[in-house]
Length: 262
Length: 259
Image (cartoon, rainbow over all chains, first blue to last red; front, side, top):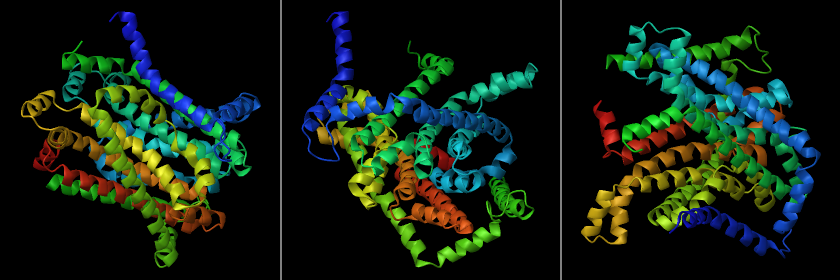
């Protein structure tokens, strides 16, 4: 098999099933009379007319901006707290049960609490996202900081590396694979919270708009909103993977070297 | 032994300190009491809740949705994972679709669930199953991939049939992964069960919390949030116990026990 044929085959393997499923959806729903399952062509039309106009700027982008703001705040707070707690054995032992409890609270139940405290504005939504994203990042950072390499630790001490240089090159570097794992979990939770904080009580945003469509029985529009949310999830996860490959390039390289595969 | 004991004492001190903080902060007015009632009043509201039959019904509803959804997702994830994992061609063809479907947030299905099932149990199940299924499937797929080729070749040369190969070679390797999948799925399932109750209004703890919030019963709302947290802790403990029980033979657990 030539190289181009092999490449074509690989592309085919990747796109074949998704394409087949889309075609199946298109054909199966083409003359659908069901009120709840409109033809895919109608959904796509609704998608273009609903989201590509003013709603993109008024509803979608603010939602995404809140998600990213909450996610960033949670990352900064989680890593900072995690470094402090992870560096001290007794602090870790003291806080562990409390953190286990706080992490175990399903984040959506905090939405009513934050509405009580902060109303239904932007503050509430960002707070909800922070409160859900914080725990995976915090607990993974603690774990990563705790399990850093002892030889590197001693080496740093012997060379008199301390302060911010030690923090940057030893502590954060050693914990970064764990931190990234925590961030990945947090992002998935963050998307959920972005949507439901808007569904529960809000006057704008992606989740609010989709629920409005459903309540108004605007079925193709509702389906297009579901598609948009799915797309958003996929885009964010691809973006995060690119970020991860960049930040952790050294780590994956190290692991490959240790396994002895090129 | 002594180190373990002082650890527990520190943990207890941490919990007590947290409770004291919750009591003092609203009492001295750092946060108004209508936003955060002191811990003692939350405890009082919790005691009231525990005496009400409706509370236990709600708790039962939440657990029912969680357990049924988790069971469906777990069985489906294992079945499909073993099937896709053991047939390389099938796995290659489906992997892009799985990668695409997995990050779709399950809350995107909320409007659909409401239209199709209303506030029925099935609404809750749709969300719970969709969210936790992927956790199990992904773990099982990586487990099947981890099977030792030498063991597989050995099984082939002993002429083990397809079923015995799955039973004696693939399954023992996959089991630790499946159990990890179970632990992740159990936590996610609880989050989605409560979400369905909160947003859709399916009966359960989440709905009670929403009702307490709209009726301004702030201490009761906090008490129910505490219950949800304890439920989460319980689910985590249960998952870890299952992990230790099921994998008692596995080196990773045996080492833990010896240490």
